[in-house]
Amino acid sequence: MEEYVVLSPVGHYRTKYLEDFLEALKVLAPPPAEIVLCFDLDSEFDYKKLPYKNL
Image: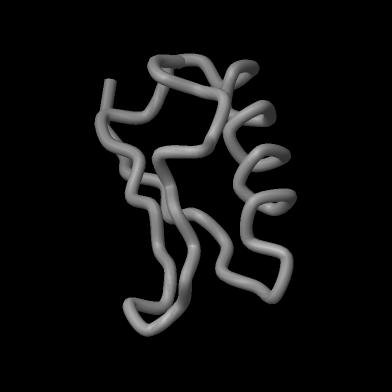
């Protein structure tokens, strides 16, 4: 089976988008080989505050 990578959405409400995105990934079969979190480097977004450690 082929491996694939998923990219996260980027938006004004980053935490909400990422929480929804990560929750949706749980139903993918097979799971992605890699998950790439995309966000603006100039933003004050702190990805460490996300409630997910591992999917």
